[in-house]
Length: 264
Image 1: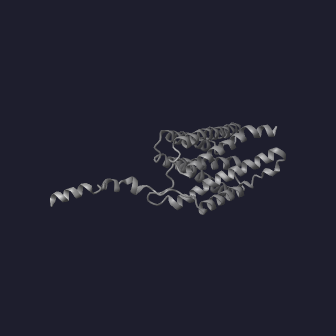
Image 2: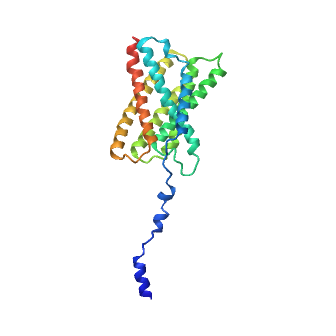
């Protein structure tokens, strides 16, 4: 009897309980899927930014210069709207266990952009309403810049702990260092209206555009590398975030190289 049982047991499949209880199978979040709600959040964020940009109408410039400025504003509204939508996705997914968002490097970069834009809009409108009759534009501009940088640094600082690949760790660290430098300069010059501070402001603007261009170039090559080597490793939102950074770099390149030619 025992011999027959032993022969029967030898033919039964072996169940690996360790594989069934694998944290990869249990803890892996479901894939992030594009929904109508995501598109509505993106559209709403872009409309919010477009409304803000109406305070700087591009149609007051004629010809090619006005057309280029309008195109840059629309591009900024679309990219910034995607960042604002990522903040909505944080409230949709981010506070659940095994959250689907944010978990990719592109998610965190997109979220940092969205948080920075929203904080900047709040600070800009608040300072405009409270200090409408006092203060100077340079002071408000520097407070706005410092608030955006601090908000961006906060998100990137949290996101850095979740990235594993050395490439992304360096991207986050360099961005944090660069943003911290801008924040310190903005705070130091907050109340200064002299000629030196205006020169430093112009230099910082050039530095922001150059960093955006270099980051866009790096994201372009990284996107190509990921599509060729690991096409299924990252989700669609991560790749859209990288595309958005590439387009933002092109926007900065247009502001740095094309606008001065058209203004002359």
